[in-house]
Image 1 (cartoon, rainbow, N blue to C red):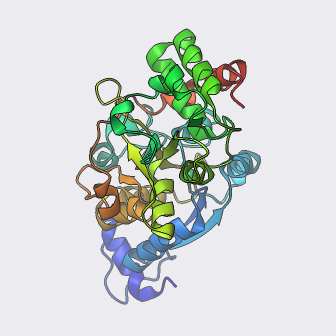
Image 2 (cartoon, rainbow, N blue to C red; image 1 turned 180 degrees about the vertical axis):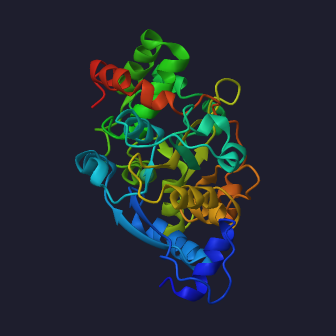
Length: 337
Ligand code: FE
């Protein structure tokens, strides 16, 4: 509930100080479309409403339907902000003209350049690392080195991969194309396919469970899925490994947001986005999902800290979107289902 009492706080935050009992103003409100799960996002919305009085109405759905909905609604959309995972999706929404470029000194200082759109149409809010997971029983960490090395014959019949249909793997391969070019990347991806122990998995959790069950020895997953599984099941006989530390760094991606092109409350939406990039909100946004805060001043969640520090790839994540079509075609040619 955004009552009169809390409304003045929000006005104050915008620099328009209203006296108690002052003129009645329309309550601040924003509408958010979120492809990030309700359970991850609702507590953050509630905190914002509590702190500022701004009411947040939201719709959650998968990114595909949300992007289609924004497109179909056009200028009539009620959405002020869209939150989604993966730079590939943020890039796509921007390409379709669904976001507006915004000028924000706050976001320029809180969100590192590699995690925001070079044209300022979207900004990363949390960083996710897509890394190697391995069986502690059957693999020694010294045997591991890079994503590229998983194409080596020594992993024949030992590798598990999630489906290439998932944008996370499309983004991984897209950034490899950016780094190595198509020919070399295709060779690597073919090598992965040759080394597969079994059919590709529908999700990262099933992949980790396959390693635990002894179906395969190594795989590639987002770290928070490993965190969630250990949180549910206790210590697993599997571990995360940081690859490419002597070369390109760990593949990272973001979840993030953009103010919509047809926002009815663009200032309020931007203020919310800025709030998300700092302080308590930033800690919660990343921490709730065991991801990494995008703001370098924000402390990592203790579970995440325990996985250790790593060197991340420093490419701008927009490459994941820009090269997505090439990546999809390449994976198809390589027989990666
Ligand atoms: Fe995910």
